[in-house]
Length: 72
Image (tube, rainbow, N blue to C red; front, side, top):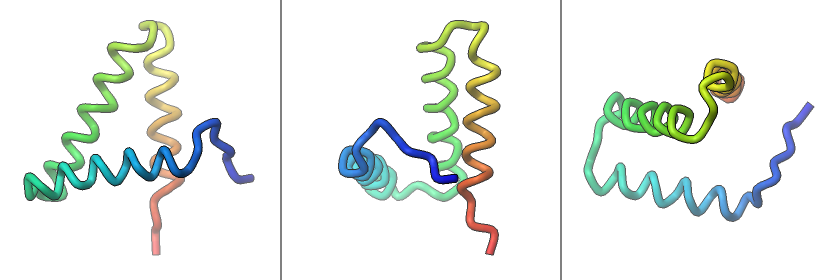
């Protein structure tokens, strides 16, 4: 079943484009890009969620990431 978002695709795509542009501007490697994105996710979880919710949200985030990866 597709996941529906409360956010407009246009907004998400613009933010994604901005982030990718910054990574490209700095000519970062794939592993550094993933490290930066992972650190951003960690900071958001640690700084914006109650401690009791962090593990559950991190697990849901990890599962969503795994579900979105192309395997072919």
